[in-house]
Amino acid sequence: TDKKNQEIFLKQGINLAKKSKGEPKIPQILLVDDVVETLELIKTYIETFEKVNVVTCTNGQDALEAFSKIEFALILLDVDMPNMDGFELARKMREFKSEHQIPIIYITGCDREGKRANIGYEVGAVDYILKPINMEFLLSKVRVFVNLYHQKKGLENEISKRTESESELKKANQNIKSIIDGVSECVCAFNKIGNLEAINAAGLHLLGMDKNENVLGSKFSQWVLPSDKAIYLKAFKVA
Image (cartoon, rainbow, N blue to C red; front, side):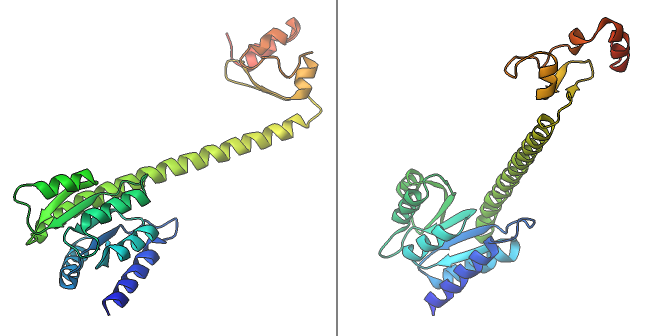
């Protein structure tokens, strides 16, 4: 039954992670503890007060499977588990996705001398919580990392949109250049003060220049006949 429930939670997490591009993703939190009652209590409490989805696992192997399929905003990890403890699990996660530093909060029953905390920090933990768990305290920490996740995704979306816009602009400019270069008449573009910004092959040929010659940025007025210079200057409002 526990295994079946974990499979259901994992599928729910994957489905929620596959939101359409226009919709903000619901942050996913991975919760690992071998005590089912603890999992249900923490999951219910966090999801009641925060808009997140908590994926639960009772062992390290299931946690690694979930970790390989879902992008998590935070991992809550019990230290004391059979077969694979929290420290070993964290190491395997780091090895699997070394480029993605997902924050880990350890949950431990006893650490009066701080030895476990030191080990936890060495394998990638950002914080730890002692049992019995203060739920309000845990929730406050979860909110910090959920907010950081939202900020990160917002920045990534902004960069992605900007990169996409720049790519579209570059493609449009290339298309325009291709069309202009195929025109048999001289076609050129100037800025407001009459500096040459673009010229097609026919224009270069008219000026008696090779394509490789650097004419962009120069004053086009140097190629205008003296009899036409007044008209040219008036057109560009150059004193």
